[in-house]
Image (cartoon, rainbow, N blue to C red; front, side, top):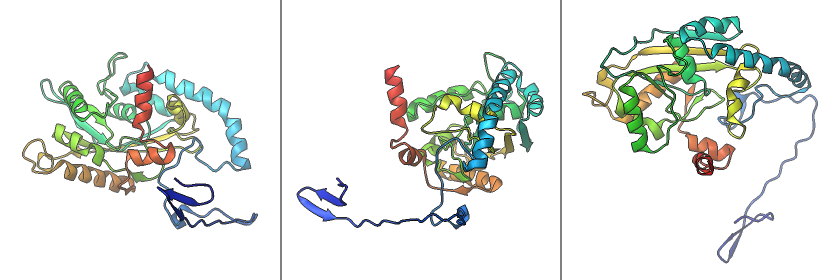
Length: 306
């Protein structure tokens, strides 16, 4: 236990810890240090503002806020009842830039399992935008690519994912959480699961550009994530489809690859396409740093209270 005086008490023994203090004097000519020159890289940070809230940016943000909120409502609810094959054309009308690269595989034929789309995680809209990019027909009550909440119970999640794949396609983000910066989190927590459940793996590189508000948060209210993303004047989503992984590089059949090898290969391909850097950091590291918990306790508490 550390005391304010810098003493660390272990049992009955007292240790003196070294404390260093720094004073930074105000300097009007000082400029922020570029991120590439920082001693330690900034991987995780929270908050809604993309740009530094200096006086000019603060004024512009406050002036844009009421217009941006109305615009986000229009962007969300105008597209909500429309089929995906139409939404990809209404997005530009509403100032949303959707860029699609690559050729996605055809939908599964009757009686065959669906494709498992593996993508990096930028916002909660990732599965929805991938569905729009595929241009699949959408019923208002049933999406051809479902979005399901994982229980993080390995056996339960494996059974649920296998059941869904027998009915159609599925999108999974192995990182388990989003990251504001250009880094890919480690998928080791989930790799042994998705790589063992299907040999029809399609890699999808996802990137988005937000110039005013971030569409993700840790400590904020996640209900507003989509609204904040669509409050940006010109939000951009870029989807890049890759060819389906050959069976020789998967684990379900005669691929001979371990699940970790498959996950690392997918992560390496996605990082190369996006120009992102791979890390060994996980979802737990992010939540411990930004909110002081492992991310599971919050969901467990909400579930028990309900």
